[in-house]
Image (cartoon, rainbow, N blue to C red; front, side, top):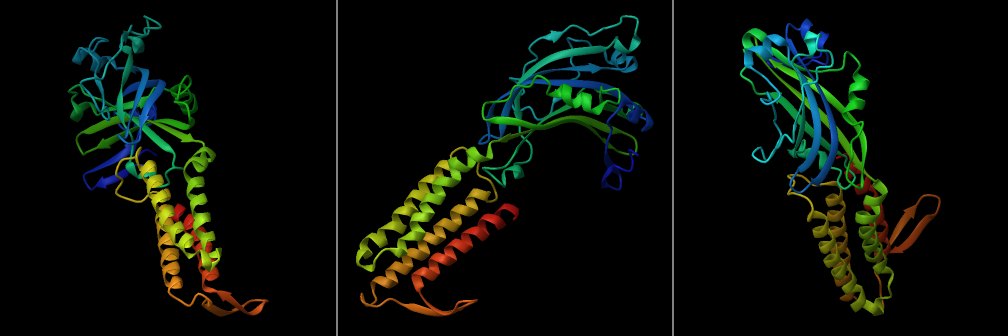
Length: 344
């Protein structure tokens, strides 16, 4: 079953999940059982794509590995691969060996460690729906001892005795998240990259946080909508107020620029447009179109307004003003951009 789930990298190696001690034995690997608990996540910075995390973990080394490498609580044999500031990363205190039963050989090399550090977030593509995107955090654990990978094929596996749900609940049982975030889901996954004669193992703690979508909507989208309503309503003003009509789209454009800059002040420079970026681009285009419409209209006869004759279903032929047509098109296009921008 493990081989069925394996993801092929090329014809010489592949990546496969190994989610239990039993699965590791079946794959011909030596399991190192790991259990992790995150105690707090804080100082989340989307701009720096980083976060701080505290927690502890237990690692149960097989005797044939621990004895050979002289592994001890004072000599950790692991590293966090996505730790940003490794020189500042700290093991707060080494907990005593967790020998629950001194007569049980499986607990002889079971060690526990506190840890605290600054970690890099997951893929940068997760912000495409910003400010409504979910925040996906990862902590990647990997062994660093110089194991004999060719003979032993070491695999980090969850120490769950086959109880996946219990392990995932343990990971976030006492987790404290920053104000404004809610924990959506979590998982502890183990993967092994295997070559014909060797392998490399790592374990990933996945945490997904979400913010209130209503809070994001009122903070970022509502100001944009208010400006757009003012711009779209501007053509309804009497032509005798053409100076005021001209000033509305230009002032609104300036307001949109400041709102857009405020939104990006907490974000890195993404190589793509976020959901809110697409809304702002449409808002810029709308302001420009209505401003040009007013410029053209100001040069026409003040007593005449350009009209169109349109056949409407169930209504018949109707005469409407160009300004009214532009207003309707802006509303329709804004709805299309809001829907299409969410998926593309």
